Amino acid sequence: MTALPTSARPVIESGHLGHVVTMNPDGSPQVTCVWVGLDGDEIVFGSMSDRQKLRNLRRDPRIWLSIATDIRNAIGLEEYLVVHGTARVTVGGGAELLQRLAHTYLGPGVKFPPMRHSSPGFVVRITVERVGGVGPWAPE
Image: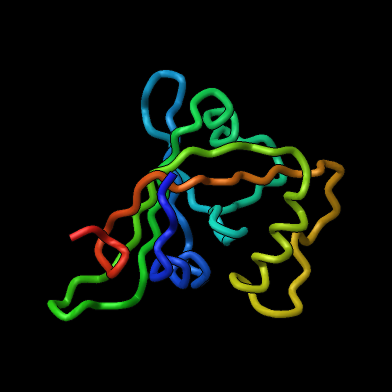
């Protein structure tokens, strides 16, 4: 486990979509966008249903996450964060997490998910192993 650099935290909490890559059973990548947030030093995202990304993570917990920013560095490159990590999927708490993240992604006072779900949902917790990309969090 690598400590999440302090400089990466605002990117994760910025309201920019996270691009998650998991591995399908045949070894091909599965890519999806998620709302992301922080819980301590773990990166979290939620789901209300058991999607392919969750099935993939139960089988193979490796995960890659990228988040683009709207910040340009001194030489004009757009900064972005890449996280290599290990994920664990837990049952329950998905709706509560999505409601919390909705305030960042959709605005204050939003009710999310908008419809009632009988599912307790899922929370994915990412333990950071390595950080890269372009920005102050990236190794030299």
